[in-house]
Image (cartoon, rainbow, N blue to C red):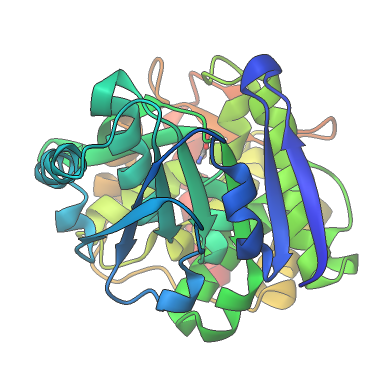
Length: 344
Ligand code: GLY
């Protein structure tokens, strides 16, 4: 195991460590509660067994969940909780999620619900889970009325970002993680691209840790983590989720720049910086999906979870990001025109 970086999410008695590194999974057994006797590992068939940590002296059961959004459901939570009950898990035991963001969201919610809450440790094997989903305590599942509409804030006992897993991550999943990584460049004004990749992952975790510590329940600054997400969610809905979340975020970040420029919050140079990060640093040259109309995008953006009144966006300015409400439709339209023109 080389150079594991440990980042603390400081939440008082519920503080925990995120260990980032190659081979970091060997630290998982030190993260589970000392007195736990049973470990329920929740994972997917496609996740190689080598990423399932060893838990000496404990009874380990493995629970496989399906791939794809259809399995991110209350039915999966019910099945997992039944399996935990049949294994005899009590509140003193622990769930260990091994996989990407879907696994950590589902296993985290099952852990939050079972026995009214048992500890969970996340072993993140995708870039998106490492720098976003596994850290910060958001868990949940979809219902037919919307994605992630049912869930709980349930902070893990610890998180492992197993960098070994990135070597075999499918290319599209890696690009989705990079879409989320790009957004961190604008949450903080640091030259993240100057950091070696492993350190950059740890820095993104650190940025998220600071934000979650400041605003665990998303009453304020945690919304910054949704930079680029308002258009991204509309693109996901408009394409029936054919565009992946991280791909949509990479476009949403560029759109947020155009909107901030249309509103006079940033200049053209800052818009160019968004394109430099997304197109050049991360090579995320995702085109706008065909078949989504401007009208549909505007309608879906208005329905976004963050829309407090009318259209609400996280937008850049010379002093950093702000949550901005009451945005005029003509600015939304002219920014969409600018995006279409620039993406070609
Ligand atoms: N994924 C955004 C958040 O954790 O708040």
